[in-house]
Length: 538
Image 1 (cartoon, rainbow, N blue to C red):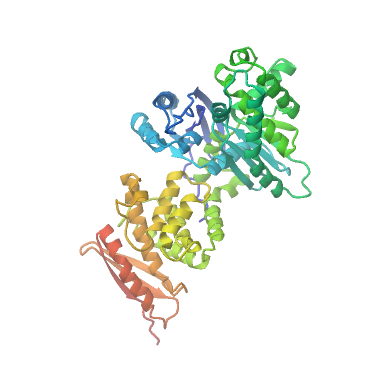
Image 2 (image 1 turned 180 degrees about the vertical axis):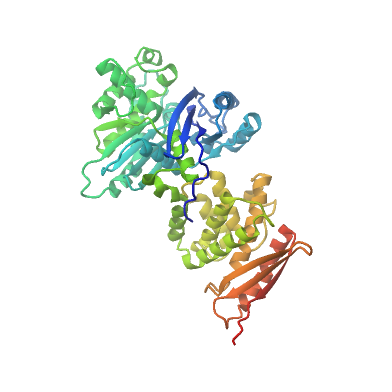
């Protein structure tokens, strides 16, 4: 599936909102599609402590949700006042892990009128990479990126060609402060336990990074993003040179500086930290845990210096939006195909027969294209979901042939498919799950939790996928092509099927099509009539 051509030629204003564990951030940019660049117009930040979950129920608290919703209302109002053409929003660690996370997103939709995409940890890391890469020249040096959030820490290894490794680990400044810091100032035992825990959590992703470095790559650059690391950089700059560089982007400091800050912060009470230049009141509460994460990461990576990049997740969201709309410079074009490459990578992992699945995907998208505007009105986004589901519909065979459609759902839903939101993964998994056996039913738990609009998508696209699977029943490519002709008077859909070999009657395909067409007919309210092209020899 090649990149689409630019969908807009006029400059536009885009607002990107990141609903994190500690804060709600928004950046508003002006995009120039001809130059494939963006200029930051405004920034907004509110510390909402969404990660202050109820320890017993693991729910987001009403107080935290109300703080976040109030912040989001302010963000949306600011975006409107600056005449933003589009507002995009994502939620990360705190919402991902909370039992009532989906309810919170529904509440945002109702009260703010904002649709929020829930993204996975690896997808969060990928978008951080996009943000950093859009603002730095990697040259020929591999870069390790670290983003310390409130609930998770992302570690990424990349070069100027592509990402080599993405990880998201459940350690963050808010989470660790809640779980490990119970004395003020922290006592020696608590600090030792905190450091040991962080080190243990970081060992696996750090080992993965080291394994992906080539023997000749002796120079590696460490880049830090987001609030915790920027605060440590600001405090270091004020202490060493009495002023903060403007911009902070490109400023670097050493592991010794971080080690000194951990030692100093550990000896101060919460109130005493307020006196430190460059440290805000709300950040003072969680800065020690964040500094410990950075110190342990730099120690394990054996990197003694870190450079600040002021672009991170929010800017990555903007770059991702530009990629999806075909508005990007060549050096990031490879990332524009991340969805397709990620689907094919997962297909390879689960030993999918790619020849078969690509034929099914071709048939499915051909049905989609021929029937668009006639039996359905879905767009390019839904077409891509159908393609992904078609490629992966048989992945469940990796586990077992019995009920493999259900296994396909599980594997797709839990695969690290990059470029997709959590709801998109849910939709793709459901579409694949219903390529055989029973049609979607409201008593099916994973189907039931979808919105009514999303259930409609699943019903229609899975019905199309069933026909596509039927047309390659023997998995030998017997059908070369087909043509759809719709008769609105009699609500009949005529399929004129051309076999690959003139002497092949495609009997098994036609039988299977007749068997599987019932659900399609019920969903679209049509009757399917199939005919096979017959060669005439003169």
